[in-house]
Length: 65
Image (cartoon, rainbow, N blue to C red; front, side, top):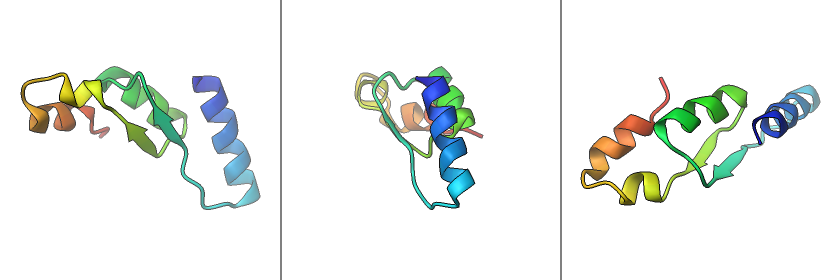
């Protein structure tokens, strides 16, 4: 999926569009960084948050800096 995200981001930027790319599924602290670097702007992370005992820490771990 990462190459598709990258290509989509390139096309959106080329056309000067204001469009979010959302990735839903498979988001972890590691994959969040990869897809954001490829151009995603919205991440849906269900089990990465709700599957952990400390929701606040889980969300902090997902934030890409």
